[in-house]
Image 1 (tube, helix red, strand yellow):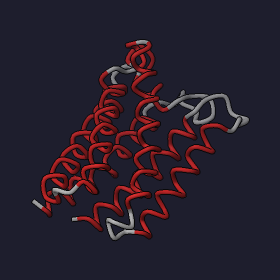
Image 2 (cartoon, one colour; image 1 turned 90 degrees about the horizontal axis):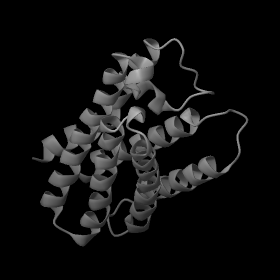
Image 3 (tube, one colour; image 1 turned 180 degrees about the vertical axis):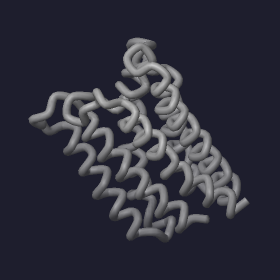
Image 4 (cartoon, one colour; image 1 turned 60 degrees about the vertical axis):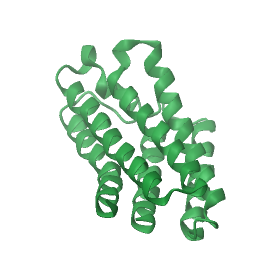
Length: 185
C-alpha cells in the first residue's frame, strides 16, 4: 500500500500536465495571456480537445484522492488527517472543474475558485503541521508557495486572464505534492 500511495501521489502531480500540454498543442487559438486554462475544457469552444483537458483533471483527481485516502488510512493520526482531508476536498474540486466545464455555467467558476482556494489553504495548513510531521523543510516550502500564491492572485497583472496564475499555482502545488509523496510514504 505504501508503494501504491507514493505512485498515486507522484502520478497525480504529473499526469495533468501531459493532458494540459496536449490540449494547448491542439488549440492554436489558446493564448496564456488572454485565456484561463479552463477555456481548454470548453466543449463549445474547443470541441473534442476539451475532453482531453477535462479527462486529465479527472484522472489526476482520482490519483490524488487515492493518495490522500491511502495515506490517511496508513498513518491514522490527526496530523495526517488534518491535511489529507483538505487534499481530498481539493482533489474532488479539481475533478469538478473537468466535470462541470465552462459550458456548465456558474458552477464551473465556483469549483475553480474552490480548487485554487483549497490549494492555498492546504499548503498553509501543511506548513503549520510540518514540525509535528517531521518535515519542516517541506513545510517551509509550502508556506512560501502558499504566500506566493496569495500574492499572485491578488496583484493586478498586465495580462487579461488567469492562465498564468492558474499554471503557477498548479505547478507549486504539484512540486509540494511530489515532495510530500516522497517524504510521507
